[in-house]
Amino acid sequence: METITKEQELLIQHLTVDLANFLVKEQKKTIAEALNIVYNSTTFAKICDVRTGLYRESAGYNYDILQDELRHGRFGQYGKYE
Image (cartoon, rainbow, N blue to C red):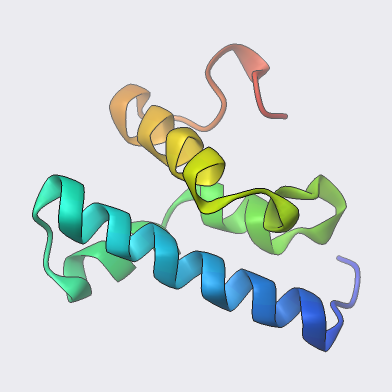
């Protein structure tokens, strides 16, 4: 895996918070539940892999990907995001 810069790390951290907040607001999860979902998702792993570029995308875009993963039980239905 590629070494990430401080800027990339900061963007990933902010994105993680945003994704957890979406889960809290839209799915009525607790903060702990939301963070557990995010951190244990393939979506988060792909966001942390800077080669995918997902860390540069909006929180809304990544939340859509996370929702697809949660709904279908796998990342990137039909290879949509890979």
